[in-house]
Image (cartoon, rainbow, N blue to C red; front, side, top):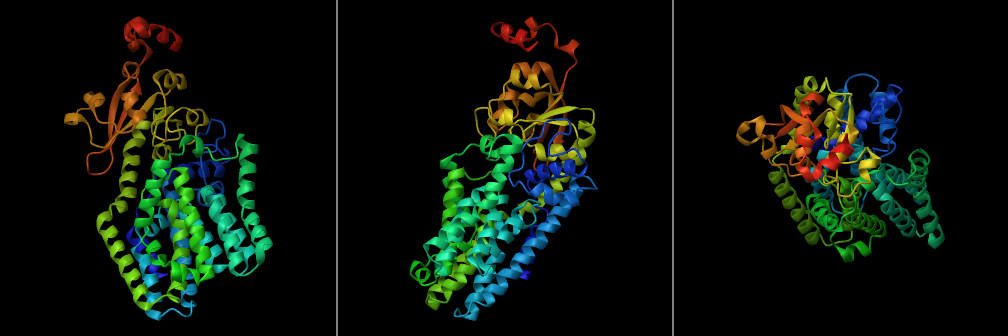
Length: 483
């Protein structure tokens, strides 16, 4: 428990924007508004881990969004400590490996930045990690393992191949035969199938909306998976093929983890830092390393542990604990933005999590994570083809654009000359139509390094002028269409 808790407490304060998306859904469920991101809009499937908002509902009945996020973070820490307790117990029972080897392998968990960071992010990751760890090392029967692996896939759909592979592999490792292995693999897919049926019934599609909002990219997926294996640290502990072949349960766990890595590459990875998608399988890989140590030469085990510790120390130095400031900076941004956003009724933004925590106004989701119409547009997560005509049709009275390097000369009037690295925001900033309909009204600083958001507000209709004057000559037909 200490190995799990201490690094997580050191990373306390880390979070991601998507955590506040789930919180907004949970708050609307708790207040009777239903499963929707905007209080007055239609229901949408904007949360990939389908059961997660329901789990947050009891914590979302009182307090603002940041208070609910804090409760979710504390829940995540408790779940991660339970995972550490389970892992330590099972490694302690892994007879055959030297005591020093088991201790060194367990200590490597403390050097995995992804495990520590996502334990306190406020997302569903700690719950998925606990379920996945129990499925792999806690359940004594393959069918029980299949059920818990399937529950993990209900939270993380990309883990369905892992769940199937783990259930079948553990059945083979326990000498259950081919028929039992097939049965266990099918049983592991039941919770995943139930979620697909619910999504089809409620929103007309079996897959999460994120599949369309964030289309797969194999190139980025392979790069993400490779980097995740490095920063995860613990995979190096099972780099012992000959010893793995003599540890059937460890082999089943490692093969399932390898299947999961392939699945991560196929879905295109993730935009969140610290290898979130790989985290749920890492503790079970640590247990597999203890099983391998019982069948490997002590010198080889010591070399792998030393390599894992060295890699973990290097990752810790490189991270410099920067993730710990995310929550504080985000809370300050929300406090700064609330009075500026209060008069607005509909805001267009790409980072909708913190915006949804700062205001109850409707939000035009420029990434399409919560909006099926935007999700269906061409482009990736931050490059949707959202043009001026489309956006004006949604009638926002405010737009937020992210500038990581600040404004030129610190002047709000020069907002169009700022650097916008995300394609959809850069396209809107360079659009003359947007510039004529919206004017900059505030700079919302994020953190101490000059980053922040430009807040544009819709100008009064009288200030826009005649359509023939506000559009270039070649675009007057589009102007009339917009009117």
